[in-house]
Length: 209
Image 1 (spheres, rainbow, N blue to C red):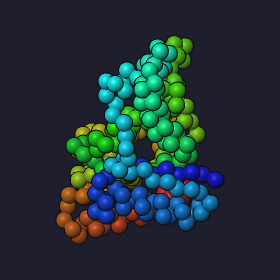
Image 2: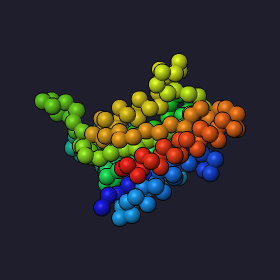
Image 3: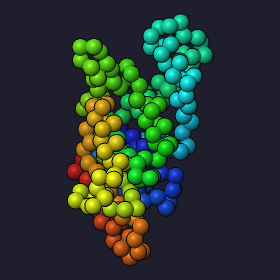
Image 4: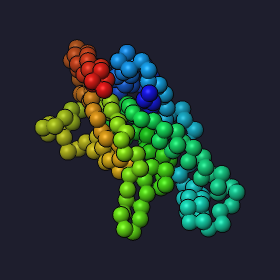
């Protein structure tokens, strides 16, 4: 049995185009894989600890065994719990709108919390950085106002997709499929066509698994 974790990064609710893609993907996945479990994490409604100076101090006090205080250990454990929830999944589905050519800040906050040494990556002098989540897959559902598809003149202004791919690669997670609903900044008739096409592709991708 496969556990599917959906990470929702849009605060748009029913109006969110990236969430509409993810919903279509997850519905089709459920139909094709009824034995699998699904869980959703909405980064906008998730209580995330701040990764500030005190968290950094707690991190190094715990990891370097520098007589961490009880408060520091408790603070670090909050981040570890969020990371372990993320790590338990076998398949990841991300719904990611483009904000200012990149990611919503709340998703970046989530990424900074879950990406922890010893939990999903490690480092040594001999081997350097090593991923710990090999064998897992991710499907990414994007939306953007502009067209950043391959070959578009704006392709290299896209810091949304390359960032997600690199982060997942760092953890050892394979990017198994990407669907982009774009451009959303267009007339209603064309937007309806773009959305219908993207949702169809998302559903087919889910069935293929």
